[in-house]
Image 1 (tube, rainbow over the protein chains, first blue to last red):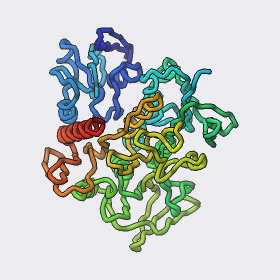
Image 2 (image 1 turned 180 degrees about the horizontal axis):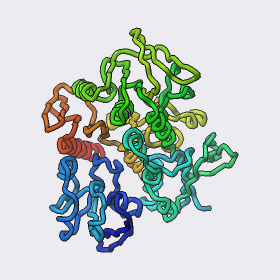
Image 3 (image 1 turned 120 degrees about the vertical axis):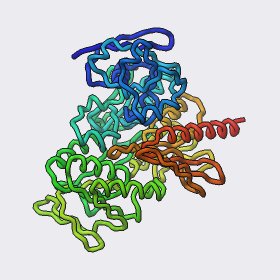
Image 4 (image 1 turned 90 degrees about the horizontal axis):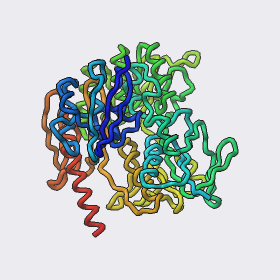
Amino acid sequence: MSLSVTFVDPDGTSRTIATSAGMTLMEVAVMNMIPGVDAECGGACACATCHVLVREDWLARVPDKTEPELGMLDFVIGRRSNSRLSCQIRLSDALDGLTVSVPESQR
Amino acid sequence: MRSRFVIVGAGQAASQAAASLRHEGFTGAITLLGEESYAPYQRPPLSKRCLLEEVAVERLLLKPDAFYTSADIEVRLSARVVSIDLCDHEVVLADGARIDYEHLLLATGARPRELAALPAQLQGVHYLRTVADSTALALTLRASRHLSVVGGGYIGLEVAAAARQMGLEVDVIEAAPRLMARTSGAMTSEYFRALHARRGVTVRVGVSVAEVITENRQVRALQLHDGSEIATDAVLIGVGAVPNVELAQQAGLSVDNGVVVDRFTRTSDPQVFAAGDCSNYPDLRGRRWRLESVQNAIEQARVAASNMCGRRQPYCCVPWFWSDQYEIKFQAAGCIDGHDEVIRSDVPGGFALTYLAHGKVIAVEAANAPAAFMSVRRQLEALLEQHTLEEIS
């Protein structure tokens, strides 16, 4: 199933990308060269460099945070209430249209 | 003529350096030379997820092909560099081609240390570094009943965990008195010994392999120095890695447990830099390190790229890494050497050990305790930044 997700840069530029269920949001960002998603550990929830801010209207729909993600999130730079690690959001059809912004700095 | 920077290697450091050179504003040509047939990819999953399920190489790539095209980075794969000519500033490929450079980055990585008693040519005997190694190991594991892991470090223990999850019987054979002895504290070693024992792994420490017993070049059993014999059909050897320094050595660069670089990631030739697993660098106090980790590859490559562009940025870092075994995510930061105090805190399904020296935090080891890990990592990073600033001022 194909679906789309939108990344918004700090300067407000947005990019909508067609992808498929099963990928993580981090993988989509890396494969589409979204600046600011470094994803140093490659999705192991070990580095906190794939931080995104989920647009408010999507917050209730993205999968819940797991313990490892909660522990890492406290230490991302620029933590907000809608902060998530994009490697922990696996895309499903229910997330078609998901919109997130990428914070200014990951390090 | 347009100047050219050449990167030898196509791993995490090479990929990062190429990206960072453009980020630094370098507009000359960049050529990245990789011996394998794949564009730079992630190695950590090779000892974990890639054994449990089939993972297409495309899912492991650090950057999409479009990145290299759009950043005007020439990626030459299956290209083996056979020598470096420091006088003419050229690298020579196996096919005879010569590529000139203004600056050269050695990101040649490391390779598994081989045990003479266990040559990779034997059926069932595996070393693990590349996608090809991982694919071959996964095939063997699927067709085997018993795995012997020689070496109780991270690679070995991750493969042991995967093999148990695949239903194999597993023995781990470690020559040192405890697991992960080179990198971790005794309490962490004991935790992982007990974890693997609970999961049905037979952990043998303080003993090494004396002889391999084969039948038609297929491994059948291992004989240990304590006289015991383990019937086995698969062997994974994870006894550390050796840096790929041969090119540097032949070229006459200074080599000592890695390519020796100064604090600005420069080798003994001012136009040649080194980063990642292959490099041996000094920290702020002059102590020399050769780290094998994603963190070191990324951060050192960034600094090397910056210095290749004419800046003078010293490399100093807070080392950190992680390991996934069963449901445990282990994360460590800093260096435990010289600690005189350990504070243990238990968390559900894990622990955190904070190491101190003279009352100051120097390292953390955490299992399923990411907040404890990140907290110490950030503290150490802040301290390092302070030290660096003090030194510059």
